[in-house]
Length: 583
Ligand code: FRU
Image (tube, rainbow, N blue to C red; front, side, top):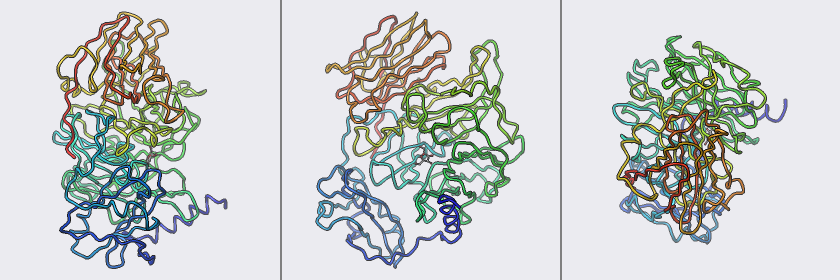
């Protein structure tokens, strides 16, 4: 038995003994923080990103209700995060907040605050996007469990409420009716005895097959926790909501799917008409597994996919599987195919993370590619040819048969280092997928969601912090966005080579990571006649208006780009209407 197997065996035993309730810690409380209810709902924790992690615990009647790893400020305060006391205050029992592993003389103890002011000490950050989704405070990565219901788009996301570095994974929740302005709905799923909340999906169980009620929103997520022997153990768990996704209850029979594999995560469920049951696609190491279930609780493995195909330079993560139809091509209008999304990290075309996909068919049990030669010898199909487009998955139940997706706009190579403070990361604009045909092959098309048209504001002459630039092209062209400090980004369309490139080497602050300055280049699959470029303070998303190229890159100009130069085309600029999120 090798070391890893031992880890898994021991961890599997742990699954059977861990309780839904938290374990008792006999450890003494090093520092107790007094939090009288009358002083308010939020305990504001002062954070120093460079400090080692301490532990902040809430303890009641000898029970550990929660424990988070928090970089409590030792020498200086970078920003504040909230410990929301409301759930504990509502229990009615006396509880205490304990801080462990933080030296007594640390500055955090004199800077703590408690009040009801959700906007307490919010930093006005120059790089906070204006029409992209971001968390108010804390760290965000993958979009999770997105679904659409009754006019509302629900977006859950990988979230650390206790710092702007990765850790303490929760599911955060936001909603939107226009895909441009987002309302913060707080934490949907917090870590528990099974582990922290990794990525997953939501479905609406209209028929109530799981026994949680008709129309329940059912979430499946990965629970991940370190084993005492090193490494993590991961399993799949369920939670359900009977109030349309506002609050979730964890299923008492969790976890519902366990295995001995390392990197066993990111479940994505969908209703499978062919077998009249639920299907689930899961990333396991460097392959995808497909399961089926009558009730979302009991899962049977159906097939495995991926060996020998495409990129295996990194871990396969965050899968999705759905049918798409060709809409734009005269040749094959109406033709449809199944698409399997496979996010990979590292191994992206420009280093680090990226979204690859496979086109093929799904017989209800097994996914097969249409032509293996498209994915052999290092060949891959990429959904977006920028460097900041990862963990793409689709909304369940988007209206009018749309397949709408969002991606996390960052890259694991430097996501923890980008120059924002109180929050880190934004999601891409929503995009609608389709299929197009080129040279006898089908590809996934990516277009900005139609809601972005509705978000167009007044026409402007020069770029603003939040704008859309439409460039009509007749042939090769360059578009340069620049500020008065000489920082600039250049997009180059080469009509002969049929490529689109974006150079961000001189875009502003680039020195926080060697992997950041770069030029990304995409094949255009034909001639580009119109480019749509979305700028929002720290991101540039460029699309061929016909959907055959998408390119998403972060930029950190030290002042906004205020001038545009176009050679070989004609630009029209619109402001994008924004409505800043309430704290
Ligand atoms: C992808 C990922 C997922 C995992 C989550 C953890 O970015 O690594 O595979 O569930 O992030 O935050």
